[in-house]
Length: 89
Image (cartoon, rainbow, N blue to C red; front, side, top):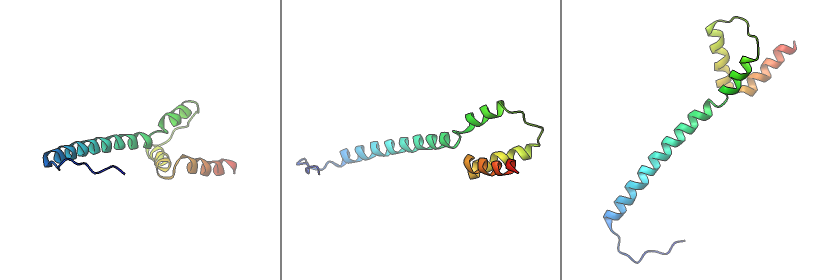
């Protein structure tokens, strides 16, 4: 635990430090938001690479959106597991 300072409390110093800390927190919040957005879309390159290697018959935009939405909502692993049960039958 740090020792209490023997210097008297200077309000201007406290306010300046508080302002600097708030700016740092705002910067961290922006970085966290960017990292969260990147993490949400981290699987796109792998999916697009896999799609490039597979022949895909014609489909409607609504079907493609439904597939993409299912991956976004339930996760790739759950969708892949469900699809494996369909192809096994």
